[in-house]
Length: 291
Image (cartoon, rainbow, N blue to C red; front, side):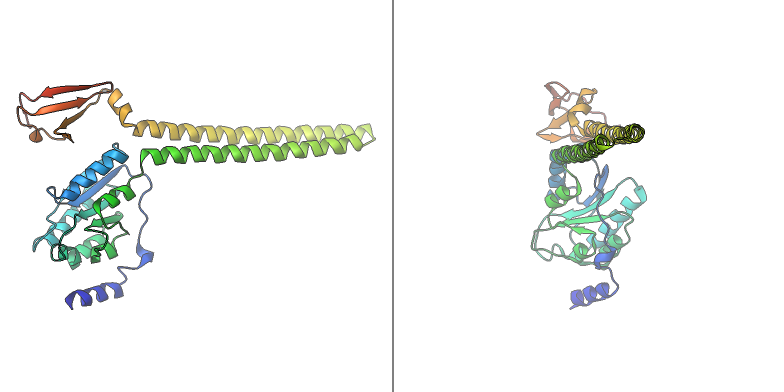
């Protein structure tokens, strides 16, 4: 009864209205994840993002996602992301569980924290069948952690496909305009051939030459713009290419198959796999400095 009363009141306040929901950014550079660092959802999110686009920066705002302390902890984690100001989008997530495990996402503190977030919020909570008040107030609801990660970050393959389609459309538009212009020129040439007076013929020839020059100038400008946009997309794809990052001298360090981000994860004796721009190395930690 309390749940139904709270849901009805929040709906009456307009918090679930479609009109207030914001679109997710098309190409986020930094996203924040609110979940427990020990939750399976955090691992699912990381694996999915590495597979789709490893250049996206991920910030973890840790929170308790089960129990009596969870609502206040989640609300504080969301506020922490807003204060930080670096993230383009916020992902609120946890894996599945019993209904009593997910009840914290029906708390009014959590709902209001999402509603007042200055950046778009996408939820990935539980399984497909689960629906919480947090899902209803969020800008986008993906139901599972993996689905949320897939929806918020486009893959490099998708970006490449979009670029190819864009260039194809530009080529089709230029070809159609050029064909139309050629038909117009041929029509004018035919009309000129039918004129008997040399003076009129000369004037029409001048008009045709002027129109042709204007058309070529317009097409040249459009082609230059298309080439510029093409180069921008190529540069963006190159910047997002993880192999390009490695070729600049960076390396990916893995321990037990997982990417290591802090020295505290790697006690002495830990076996490491180091991926370079060309080839991989195996190493072992002999000393650990956490400064």
